[in-house]
Amino acid sequence: MKTLIKNAKVVRAGTGRSRKEDILIEAGKIIDIATAINPEGIDKIIDAAGKIVLPMLIDMHVHLREPGREDKEEIKTGTRAALAGGIGSVLAMPNTEPAIDSRETVKYLKRKIKQEAFVDVFLSAAITKGRKGKELGDIERLAKEGIKAITDDGDSVDNSQLMLEALKQAKKNNITVICHSEDKTLSKRGVLNLGFSSTCLGLRGIPKSAEFMRVARDIKLAKKADAKIHIAHVSCKESIEIIAKAKKKGVQVTAETAPHYFSLSEKDLWSFDTNKKINPPLRNQEDILAIKQALADGVIDVIASDHAPHTENEKDIEFQRAEFGTIGLETELSVAFTELIKKKFLSWQSLLDKFITNPAEILEIKKKSIKVGADADLIIFNPDKEWVVSKENFYSKSKNSCFLGRKLQGKIEKVFHKGKQF
Ligand code: DOR
Ligand code: ZN
Image (tube, rainbow, N blue to C red; front, side):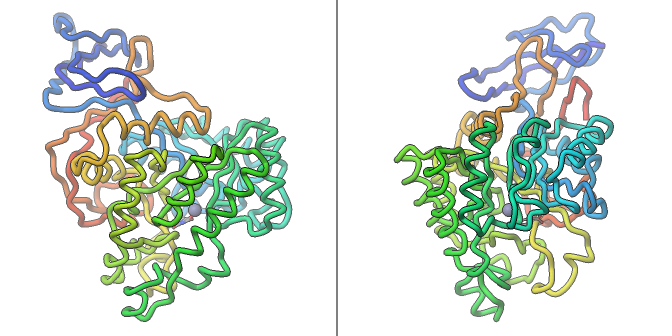
C-alpha cells in the first residue's frame, strides 16, 4: 500500500532544507520525496496543504514509572502518549520502584520495551544505588548494557565527592550525567516558588537558590572531572546566567527546560491547582522571559517534557500533600508552537534543534529524519488549529496535566510511525 502526503511544508532538523514537497510512503519507509509526485496508482492521498510536516521528536526526560508504579504509567501507555505527542524516542527516568540501578532491571525493561513500546525507549540509570545518594551504582556495567545517561532525577546527589566520582566514571564510559540540581536543605518542605505568591497563600516557598547554587556546584564538579553534564529542568534566570558563563569558559554543559517553565508562572498557583505543583516550581515573568531568550540564544539546548504522571489519589488532595509533577508528552509540541514560534522566539528549524538535533547529540542516539530510505516517522501539524487541552483525549494513564483547560495554537493532526498512521 502506497500513501502520498501532498503539498506539505517539510521542516527538517539541522541543516536540512525546509520547502514544499510531496512524500511517498510504502511498507513503512519513505520511498520518494519530490516537489510533485504523480498520484496515479497510489492507494491513499493526504492533502497536507497549509500543514507542516516534521520528523518525530525526541523527549529526553520522561517518567514511564516502570517498574513498580504501573498505577501511574506503564511503558505501553506512556509510549502511546508519546506517539500521540509526535515523540518518536524517549529517555526513561530511573526514579522507579525499585530504581533502575542494576543489570537485571535494565535487562527486564529492555525485554518489556521490545514487546510493548510504541516508540523507541532509551534508558537512564541511577547514579547511586537505590537513588539513596550513599554509594555509586555500577556505572560501567550499566553502560555496557546500553544505558544512555545516569541521573538520580527527583533528587540531587548531595555528597560532592560521590558526584565527582560519578562524573569521572561517566566520562570513562562515555555517557552523560543528567543533573536534577536541587539543594534540599534549602527547598525542604517547600511547595511552590518562594516569593509574593508563597507569602500571600501562606505556603512554604522554594527559593531559587535551591536550584542555582546546586547548578553552580554541578558545573564546577563537571569542570574538575572534565565530564559532560546536562542540567535538567532549568526554571530560573539565575541558573541560566551560571550556565551561560560556564559555556563561555568551555565547560561541557548542556541545559534543558520544560514547556511549563516558559508558559506558566507562580501566579497560576493561586487556584491551588495541584497539577501545577511541579519541582522545580513555576517561577515568575522575568524567569519565563529569560528562559525564552536562553532558548533563542542557545544557552538552553533542549526542550523536554519531564512527563511526570501521578494518580488522582496523589493529586486530588490538599496542595501541601500532593505529589510534584505534570504530564507533558501530548502537549509539548503545541505549547512550544504557541509560546515560542508564534511569539517569534524560535523558528521551526531552531525548535527542531531543541527537540531533535541537540538531544540526539547529547545522548548519542539516532534521530528521525525525513529522507528517502528512512522509516516513515513523521508528524503532520496543523498550525491554524486551536484546541483546548482536556483530560478525555489523553493516552497517558495519568491525567495530571498543568495545561488542562488551556487553549493552544497548532495541533498534531496525524503521526506516521514506521509508516503506520496514528
Ligand atoms: O515535578 C517533578 N516530578 N520533578 C521531579 O524532579 C520528579 C518528578 C516525578 O518523578 O514525579
Ligand atoms: Zn528532576
